[in-house]
Length: 151
Image (cartoon, rainbow, N blue to C red):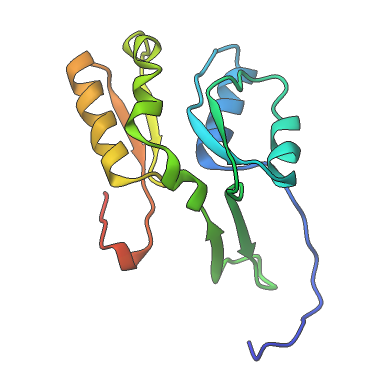
């Protein structure tokens, strides 16, 4: 941890909790709606190319943004002492982007939310789902410096 380059092994996989859940549901024969953002650079194309079996119509490409990326560091025992995540593209996921899909959300048996979106958008989704009487499951993870706590 002194700034030198250490020898290791690098692997890449498509991810994101929401994307992974939508992928699994699609493979099980469901037709989930994944409302998300991606950057306009090469990482987005690599990610989207791994999603050809899924409905990608509600993924917004944000010009000038980086696609969300997470680097997980594993030690020799396979434990994760830390990870580095760049989720800033999701800061541009505004309530209107969710509202654009209100008709589909109203028919959903369940809405699943990843917490890497603005608090304003989280609040909007909770309020909308409450009005529509659609159950919500949330997986929230925010950096400690923002003082968000979800349980």
